Image 1: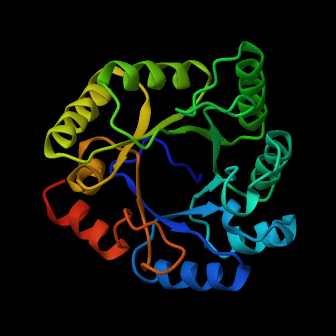
Image 2: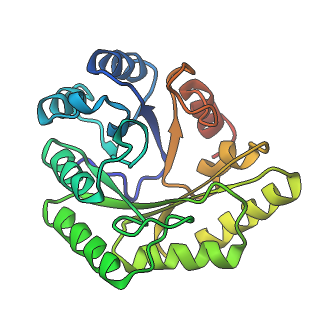
Length: 251
């Protein structure tokens, strides 16, 4: 059974950020030959005209049975798309074979820290999560705060994501100083000890140790990239480096 849950080691998950289908398939084939254990298909990076069930099936089908983590955020080529339209695309990605579906924490109620506060929006999120679970899918809820965030707020968001039904909690903060990075490492340990759920806690910014070591500290996934090109996320380590850190540093 394909799953992102309860693995002995965090899955090496190669992210796909491509505007057309062929480059995505090329990256899948190359990454699969170099140790990729799962893939992250970021559908918002496809041109809108390419976001079709047929193309979703082509890309996911190329993964060779490996688990697929799918996102469909409201940025990139989805700028201006309504959350209701994104909801339909998430359900379509689930039907096309994705294993883990990313539901934005502020879906239906955009907020600066990407965590909805409107009760009606929260109820709709929980209804969507339930629908995805009924399809046999796993759900990750994400909040991309992208700035340093105190432990109390991180834990509050994590517990609320869990309450809404997420199987995996995802929070992305920031770290621009060593002091902030050390505190993020402490928060990471706090999540591991107290949350009681699988999670993905990441940071962006000038300090990169936390991002590199997250897989050794409790993250369920290691988000990496096959190559650094114009479409990849600079903070994500190369697959070969992520694999070396996980497997050769006494994980």
